[in-house]
Amino acid sequence: MVMNGDERTGIEDVERIGAILPRVVETIEQRANGGSRLLVIRDTREQAPWEFSGLPVTVTVATLKSGDYTLAGGSTFCIERKSGRDFIASITWGRERFERELGRMAGGGVIIVEADLHSLLYGSFNHRPGGGQRVHPNAVYGSVASFLLRYRIPTLFASSRADAEALAYHLLRHVERQRQERAATTITACRVR
Image (cartoon, rainbow, N blue to C red; front, side):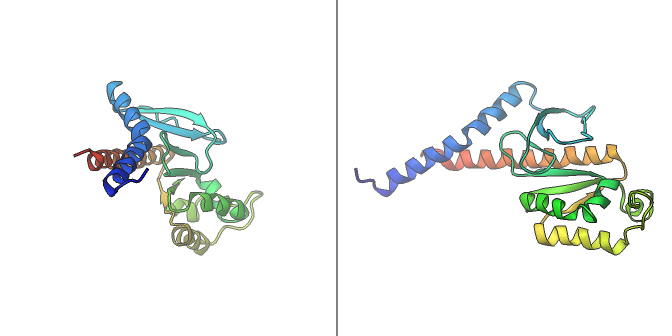
């Protein structure tokens, strides 16, 4: 069978619609069920999970390839949660493992640290186990710069665990809104004339 350009375009449109249809159905179902709940997946290995208490979030638990939190429905965006102490460990003696994780996240995520930068640099977070030497501020600044430039992953600092959780919620909400807008644009672009 020989296809002209119009028939080929029609097949490509059908394939595109088929690829986004599950997300459209999920969005319609969300709106039918109150629509304002964010569907978040938390990694099974997360040791100090956010509960998103008081926020319109439904959390399910599954094994993620990278990050600690992502959106349901195939999002490529993920959040890596770190306590202040864990962040210091990840940029020093646990750096090799952490950079492998960042490599899997490259360009599609963010690190949220549950500590403000000053506390991280000069406070109780900045001690090696057993009371060892403090991590130099330049090591923290250099790591943050390296993660952004090498992996395109920003590091955001929140003054408390609750603030970090709220920041994560708002980031995920914006990513979901952008995803819905792209899906709506794709549907509009794929309409048969």
